Image (cartoon, rainbow over all chains, first blue to last red; front, side, top):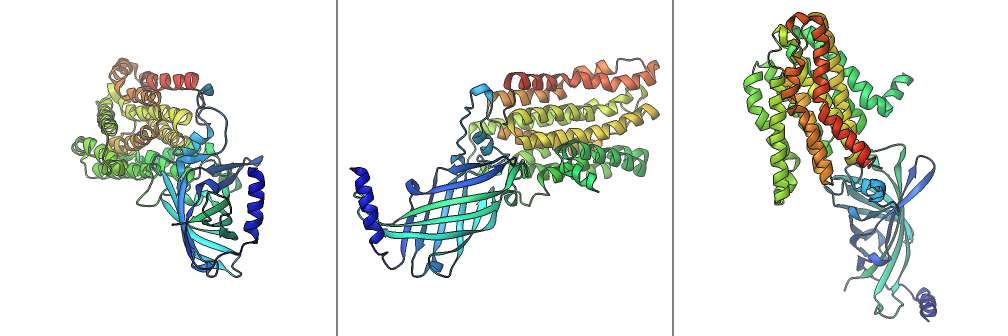
Length: 203
Length: 309
């Protein structure tokens, strides 16, 4: 029953036109994923995510270049899906090591933030999001490729047709630019970012 | 050139070879250039130079100022110690200045390294930690000075090497504990400091064997090398997650207290023993003060295992 409702709602939502005008949105943590990928010794790529964050943005599909974004991420919420328990053999887990002073130093820097500075878009559907990422106490510019996926009233019952918008963002950064140099280059310096963001209009 | 660039890029080069070589060479240069007086007092500048060379290679450069992270503040605390020590020795104020700054330097360093936490309203744990670290620092500086007492006299000439031996064994202990359990970064830096101290110590030891007089340590050594060691120890304590890590760091610090026992043991050889005594005394001293760090390392290795995985 639920699956059929979702299927029908998705079909309806796709057909509906995106409403005009600017709107302010809160980042929906339930439907937003902040994923990073790092190379491990040349063998494979490790994926990780940050599970706790909050953010807001404003967006007008007619004037995408006027969009502004702020995102605050709790660094301690990182998760690389490593299954080794801290207590097992007394070995510190990978995530705990990543939280240490060797990497994210979450004790001293409990959050990292992204604040946009500029949006470039030629066609209103894709473009580049420029901003400053503050991590480990240092602020450096970052450019992300952004794709506007969809903006429409949420089709599912219980959401009260709240205006919802979604983006896909991709980019790469060098962690050493922020002073995170442990194990470079054995553990990749270049970090690939995969950000899938949904926002719900502020009421 | 390829060999050199490879060496500088490899951990063993950054952590061991470069700091050792820099300290060894600079200790000789300063001693020769400065002569028996100033040169002897300031030869320990080689330790500071070796440490900073290693820091540059390991961390990829000099940290920005003001530094946002504790690991970056370590650099500037160590630099302040070295600069202060050099000024005191150049001004001939080694003793008087040493007494004063043995209190002021740790107080200032600890405050600066925890400035944000203090401003946010320090809890009891932080206050207790800072007090303990301050007291330990005073003891370290005290034993650094006291261990070299009488080095101008032939019967105790080996004592000139004792402060550096303390730094060497404590640096190895701190490096091992940090590497195994706390932070690879701090572990590497502590080992680099130990390597730099080893380079200086080898040069001083050779001079001691040949001439009967090793290099002095002065305020340059006490606040330069000792200051760097303490800065790393502070950072390791702040980063430590478990009580056992803190206990092990405390055991390493006992190397400076064991000096009470090590010094008379090492200097027990009669003056008539001459060159043989000069050969053996520093080794005996090092073996005794090395017991606490060795015990801490052994426990960390066998009981805790490799935890920074």
